[in-house]
Image (cartoon, rainbow, N blue to C red):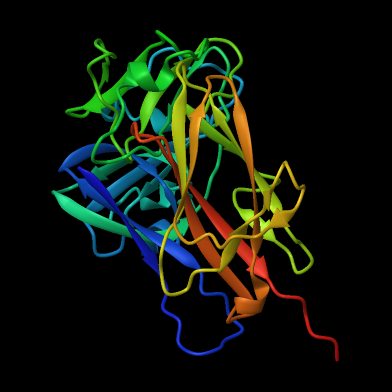
Length: 328
C-alpha cells in the first residue's frame, strides 16, 4: 500500500532562497520484488545514499528503445541483463561493481527488491512529466491516481484507441500477471505496470494538462501570466477541480479572469479550488494564472496545484516564480 503526504518547507522571515514545495511519497515495500512508480524527484538521487540503512538490495529500471517489448520477463529472470535496463546493487553485495544505475529519477517505474517488509519515505519535488509511449510495445509506466479511490484500468483507458482493450501486466508475488478483468480491477497509486500501446499515442489519462514548457509552471522575473490548458480525454462530460495546496511557503497566485460582457480583466486571488464544470469529452479549457509578486516574501517562491476529476485522477503541477532583480 502506498500513501502520499504533501509537505512544504518552513519559512521564517524574509529570505532570498526559494521555499520549495515538496511531497513525501511513502512506499510500503513487501519482502521480495516490488514494482514502484516514483511520483517525486528524490532530493537524494544517488541510490547508495537513497537506500542507505534500508533492506533494499536491488533496484532496476527500463529505458525504452526502438526494440518493442511483447512479454515482460519476471524479475527472477534478471531482465536487466538485457539492453536498455539499468540496475543498482547494494554496496554490501559482491556484485555491486556491476551497478550501472547511477541516479534514481522521478516519474519513472522501478523494480525494487527488499530483503524484508519496509516503509520507504522519499522526500522530493513533484513534477508533471507526460508519458512518452513506445509504439506497438509494452511500456513500464505508472500514473498519479487517488490512493483512496483509484479508477479501474478500463475506466482510465476508456476511449484511448491505442490502449483500450490492450494488455496490462502488474507484479503479483514476484511475477508479472495479466490483468484479466480490467473493468473491475483498480489501479494503485505509486504502482508501475507494463501497459500495451498499439499504435502512436499521447494519452495521459482521462484528464491531461499542457504547460508552456518543462514539467512546471515557471514564472520568470518578467512573466506576467501563463496558461494551463486542461483536456478532458475521457469518454464522458466531467467536472475538473484545480486546487492550490495550502502551506506556509506558498507563492501567492491569482487567476486572470476576463469578463466577456465588459472585456474587463480582474485578478481574483487563488486561495482554494477552481471548478471547471461540465467539460465535454474531447474539449479543453485554459486557465491563466499570475503571481502576486507584491506579496512575495522571497526572491523566488513556489506553490503546488492539484488537478483532479473526482473519479480517481490526480495531476500535480509545481508553480515557481521569481521577482525582478533590483537594479544597482
